[in-house]
Image (cartoon, rainbow, N blue to C red; front, top):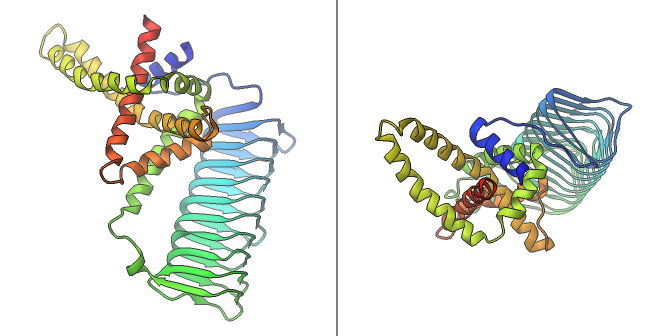
Length: 370
């Protein structure tokens, strides 16, 4: 309980991050520059937060990083989740790769799927992807071997390698290079014809749909992508630094969530009234200003926390237990952002989640000080 209170007060009052003891199977590193040397072996999961992260050793668990520049040169035995500016993966990955970044380069073997949300994705000719490649962003250049499908939505897609599972993309420009070898059908939505080099091999059929007839101009895809990235960055920042107290917060906060929604509603209605009364009085003005500051920060903190709460609810529904992990946090963030674009029901559900999360924060603080 004390760890939860420490988390809440650090966020609400100081808005700075700290470090909590990690589990024995988890290694957490923070700092301006974080590195793992070639001789080092991390026996479990590895989490890092910094300006620059370089991994040249071996990670026997998951590799999850939030940093400006990320470089991997060793081996990761499980999944990779990276949020950063520039991400270079020259490591063998035995699981899946999930990246949100401006510039992503993959140059080695990935046994699972690759999912990238970013400005540019480059898969070099030395890379071999065991599963699918999912990309949403600006430009994708794929020169490596893809054993699954290439799926996504981009401004420009160029493929100059083997794709066994076919292509299903939406893009303004699609190009197949001389070394392209597509082992299944190509389905694409574009305003222009696919550009095919004379040496490109296509085993299946080519099906084109006009972008004007298939796209939905009413759905703000760029707005969704932007809001998702901002929300995911904030939420995973909390997760990477405060994983254990967040797990305790979820297990406490989700219980009697309906009551927490009512508490959150009362806080939203009554707090501005109390603050207004304090601000108009000479003696209470200073307290009112502090109260206003804390109230606004509480709302600000509740926004990323509600993603964690909703992800844990999904885990409970599917796995029959509450779980706070990068996967469920990311899924929770995505669905919460999608709620904003669902007519009629989306906004009420979003507001209920926000009120419930805010009520959970208030309830935990009350239980502690009581």
